[in-house]
Length: 394
Image (tube, rainbow, N blue to C red; front, side, top):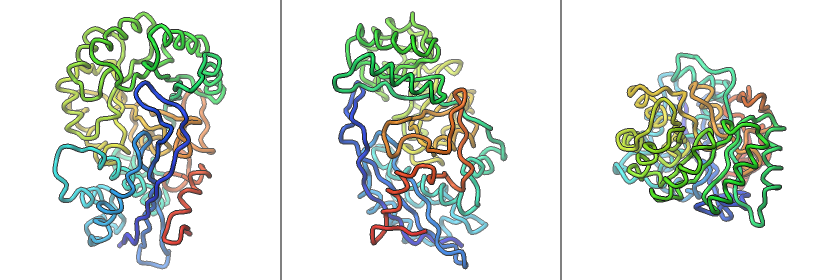
């Protein structure tokens, strides 16, 4: 039986000197987590690593005081499967014990950070890359050989200009990406339309360019933007209104015939149910971007997928936010539509690492046990510094 011996967590600062239309990321932090476990045999301790998904500030104290403590005092039988290995589903139930329903708030990302480390640990215990572990548990052993990915960038920088933006997009194409996403709403419509045109000129087709307003607009302004964007024929228009403004979103779906995307700031099945009931989303074109790391972890995400499929949605319409190596495994193992990528931004958490090549807009998760954080040396250095003495050995 596998026993969780300790859970370490620390706060790190991300390198993010840019902003979107709603927030600056200059002071953005994140929580890095290590779960140390012992199988009770001669193999010795094993360690799984994870972090709080990108875009929310660190949750380190919440993890220490509530969620890690609940795991550490629990009987291992409560979070082990029948083979004596940790079961992240059961771990999630332990962590959510005595939490009131509703008002999900920041706890969803705190639990998601521990959940990510749990899946890394389980993959290592099974000597399997995570995508194969996920395929076995949730998808009848089937997985995609490669995953569609797009480069998310185009943030607003101090002293920004079209030349810098175009250089950024060129670097993505040279890396192997074929589709990109940029931010809108931080400047006037006229200025942003120039930015979009400049990116289309580089990429070669508007159908390979998406734009993201990050929930910046009220309904009337979102409709104005939708009218301006429609003639361009973009790949999608993301979060035109506040993530919970389902009335505003429905108004945009009624006026904007092309694809919309939303979901990264929805953290539970109930959130997704409300979106489906009241947001006007269309299963034949729109995209859903819920992020396992922000929504209690992978178990809740699988519940969301099952619910959507019960409504006739294809899981191929789901493309998680987050730009992380973890979500690359999730996309490959669950055979969803693809995933976001953060090449060169939100380091050391963002990006897929040194072993992942982008070829014709697709990527494959590394063939390493667990998530394969070893392919991200700077992030591994953050993980290695965790522990009672500031150093984890493994």
